[in-house]
Amino acid sequence: MREIYARRISSLPPYLFAELDERKKKAEKRGGDIIDLGIGDPDLPTPSHIVEAACHAAKDPSNHRYPSYEGLLSFREAVAAWYNHRKHVTLDAEDEVLTLIGSKEGIAHSAFAFLDPGDIALVPEPAYPVYNNAVVLANSIPHSVPLTEENEFKPDLEGIDKEVARKAKIMFLNYPNNPTAATVEKSFFEGVVDFALDNDVIILHDNPYSELTFDGYASPSFLAVDGAKEVGIEFNSLSKAYNMTGWRIGFAVGNPEILKGLRMVKTNVDSGTFQTVQVAGIAALAGPQDCIKRNVEIYRERRDILVEGLRSAGIEVKKPKATFYLWAKVPQVRDFASSPSIQFSLFLLERAGLVVTPGIGFGEHGEGFIRLALCVTVERIKEAGERIKGLNL
Ligand SMILES: *Cc1c(COP(=O)(O)O)cnc(C)c1O
Image (cartoon, rainbow, N blue to C red):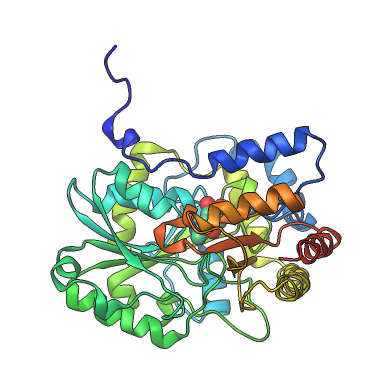
């Protein structure tokens, strides 16, 4: 029989979490009490005033028809006001804001908007896998830009091969970062703008964790830097800040010409975001913001407990200033030499009933680390910490 799948499908990297998933299911079948620290998906409900707004909007027949491609103007105005207020960035709601069906949708479609087959995209690594895989699906070439511990998980822009940098069409960035939980200051983005201008590279900054920050740290928007709007756009999302992952709503903001490209792809692929969900989005962005403060306080408490648990078990981990992840080092005490992050993840599953994500699942440079998501209750976090201590590594 002839090959049924397009080459772009077979070119996707293997699903590295498959084996772990398999083993998790087996462990659960055996009756194991599994604590899942693998999934970065808020366990907390969407705040009720947002749900109420959606219930109300769902009853209005004018919301039942096809939405506009770029999204409700009222939603885009709410985004612009929110960016102005929280990020000190001025946006024109008409042509500098684009509604997305979750930011993942916009990230993936960007590859089709800006890359021709054979074009180069600069992709940080380790990273959210969608950047690399969208480039692969567009028959283009991801060029890995390592994020190393020595460089605080920031890309070494000077270290990128000059010819590659000049040829590259786009660059993905993401701070606060998933999976490393690294954060940056505004000065980092100033360097990024210079790099983009020097090399004529479009910057696509992914910022879904912008509100989940701790200990007085405020994460800067890429667009808050002079010149950023000339070279790029920023993706943001209601998923993580407002516990709305299931609703599928996000947005892209910034350079109108770049947004137009993304919009052109979307016009031909999807038909916009359900208006009821956009109305819920307005309730989130324009409503009371104390729900974010509550979320941050919940994640901070979980973070502190799990960091303590890991450290007292001899596992090296930095206390992050943002995101709901911990990026911990695979300890050297046992023989995990051949594939440390996978072997240690399996060890934690089998010996402690803990699901964590092996760093290598985010790219080769993620090797040597595991990612733990703080999306279970504080009781379960405490239990996870106890179990790790009990391993006597
Ligand atoms: C969760 C996440 C997203 C996706 O968010 P949605 O808006 O739900 O699609 C995008 N980028 C990163 C880095 C994420 O962790």
